[in-house]
Image (cartoon, rainbow, N blue to C red; front, side, top):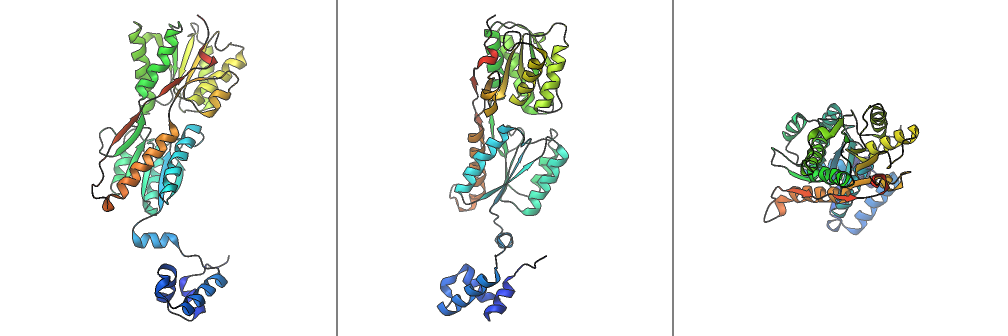
Length: 341
């Protein structure tokens, strides 16, 4: 393995002190032209690349922002990352993207890694419903912003979508189409988003004079297509099968759609389906999927901007005020829910 070239190697090759090499790199105007040329020649000849991480540690100002999401296999979080990366790049920063896989243990490991790397700050979609990981991370004094979750009981910034309103949009649409027996494919019950979307669904049913018994919940351990197919199989096994299903995200909805297609159940004529997130694949499905759209790119960008604002507090005359930004969802109606009843 080739040994890395250090600043001492450059100084020795150029016949100057380490301080002179440092000045050439950081303050070239302070070094005589002939000496500067000799040092630059040595740098080029040896292939020296300065350690940006070491420089940042000395300065106490990392140029890396951490982003920890629930599932990078979900296009929704890819869009969140795109928005965050765009805002970070405009500020001259990079983004370290990590995936907790909805696992609190992996989340804790990545938060420890961020602390070890002394990142500028962290954008976090929590996987740990207990909040213990956040409490532990807070001790490091590294700023963080919650993404896709309201900062309840904390003073940190957050950027989220009104999931109660989103759940109500989905179920109100189905009720208006004539459905009176619905299912909710809900995902892990520990996630706030899953619970809030269910609350919104129940609110919409109450508005229509229907009780909670009109919504049958089918929980899943994960928020992916395979879990949706499993929920679809359970749905098919019900003696009094609902006529419509609302899914906590689009991946679950696409899995349910696959299960119905394999069983020969017509969508939307025999079962209407509504998803959540409005990922790119929703419109491209065999039966284009009605979905509640979240502004994912905007969410990531706003979260990054709040984090940048907080980490620049020292240079701002007004300082930083923690804020909770709540964006509004939008229902996008497509063929999967347009049966005539």
